[in-house]
Length: 279
Ligand code: AMP
Image 1 (cartoon, protein in one colour):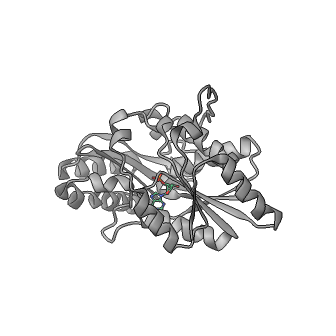
Image 2 (spheres, helix red, strand yellow):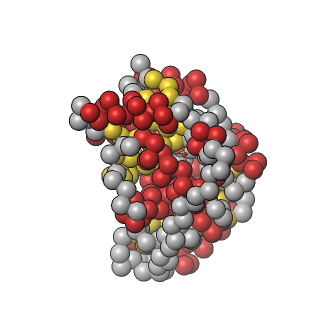
Image 3 (cartoon, rainbow, N blue to C red):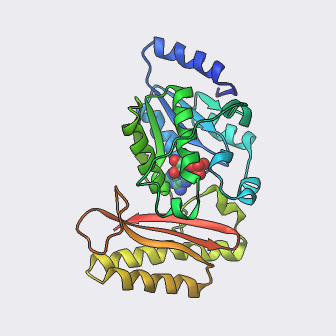
């Protein structure tokens, strides 16, 4: 049975009993509307920990767009059934006031790696992420936390924060899970119209083609521009970015002299798709 807990006081008690018997606690932070991407993190957490907490909290602080927050899909009953089937010990699903009580006044801001890409197009997003993740680490007292590479920049921001603030937790990045047609799974995909859903995998396909071309020695800027044009012509909306960056520091690069990734964010209808792949 998965126990649903809504307050940090109750969670703390539960975790204390586990820790007294020497158990390693793993946490998987999510915003719910769970899919196989989330469940792959849960399975990894089960392998690498004695007890698993999944958190579901649609964090208002990380949404820079009110409409996106309001339209964010929510289905806790269905999520709970999925977590039961995975043998998750605790679903921690606090309300907004439990996380941000009156008088809350602290922001965790990670500079550098949080500034380009998502940071540039979603002002305040990573402050919201870092703050809530720091709080969830404090509330769960977990020893390991599992994050998806789907949100590559988020993983880098969280790793930086944990190192800088000496947070006693190990961050475990897990590979991106995709639909059969290549589209990276995302809770927001359910908001795509059937036409846009059919078009969406084109993003990953063009990213892969660009990565292959760059690996084969094609010039970086021209290759990325061509990919952008192809995706635009296919019927996507505005680009936020399609960049080649160093994998760890996310510095812009024009030559493959270190591990690199292509990272992209593009609009399709009123959904914003993000993806990234290794080059
Ligand atoms: P979210 O609920 O979208 O905030 O995501 C919660 C966690 O699941 C984050 O660590 C995400 O990176 C991860 N995640 C989301 N989609 C995927 C996916 N397709 N594959 C792997 N991990 C994912």
